[in-house]
Length: 211
Length: 228
Image 1: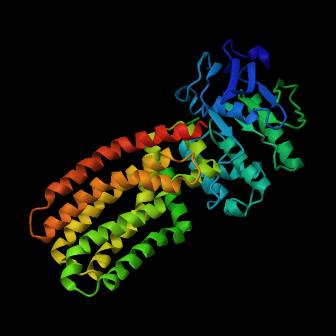
Image 2 (image 1 turned 45 degrees about the vertical axis):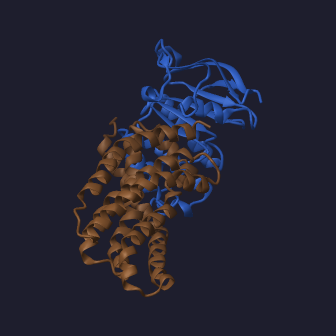
Image 3 (image 1 turned 180 degrees about the horizontal axis):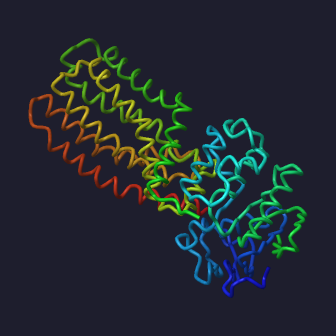
């Protein structure tokens, strides 16, 4: 995988630290992420995984250290459209159906070549639930509906915050398969997790955060 | 891969908010019901003095509609903030200000427009002279989007805080005063048979300014609210 990686990494962190009211949350962290790579962020509850994710999306401002996107300082305008974020809040409207939610996501983010909404729903195991209100789906099914968004929008970098939460065994397998396919297609992904995760596509890079 | 054009993103967001409002139509009915109740109770409180009612009718309708709008204003960004839709919107490759403009437009269409539709009914309940009706409707058509836009900026500013309702009401009061003065000025002039285009033109000018600036201010304020 690294043989084809370009010289400038997609995302690079240099001495990245984060303080909340002078209280250190994590850091300093150094890592590089190239296209075609998968990185796991591991840490206990409260070790700052979600905070790191929000920094990487640009929702939080980087105050200590540097974050580079394709070699230049990360700013929202520079990486917009190339990054998709899936956090604890799934960004689904409870009163709309998965199909309607995905249609809005495509309207905002654009559409990747490949599966249409029905195919994406079938792939995440929601065939037949496309027109049910999200409010009536289980927590795991909501997560799957949010995962379908990853298949539909064009993005190079996936930032997934605890994608395994609420998922059953087949759901976990599904996330792993989606990640493998994305990485094999030249995408990159950062995934946080507090549990042990196994990938079939080789050993991913690991970032260990200390709580 | 295809990037989403701005027009399609605007349409998708507007459609989403309108569908959401339709699925929760009980929430739309509340301000309308409130305005009806207030306008119905006024004559009972003041007594059946026709001259008095005619004199205050315009102001009462204006005030009722503006207050009813405030009922729904608080929830403008709350749902999106709670379910993570706002994060997805901010992270999307679209410029944030026009997107928020669409949200404000959808909010105005679902809260203020029903109120404007029933405004003639409220006005006739209070015996507003028919000659003043065009001035009332025009004033409402300009004043309500202005309040929506100004209110949206304040809602965005207080979005991160808990129990923002009180703070919002306090901050919105001074901004509503000039809107109210110009709208009421147009109505009073129309009732006395004087030309009433000048105050209406002032409202229009303020609206034009707010349409451009308020979404930008909203976008900046919401980015700050999410950066916490």
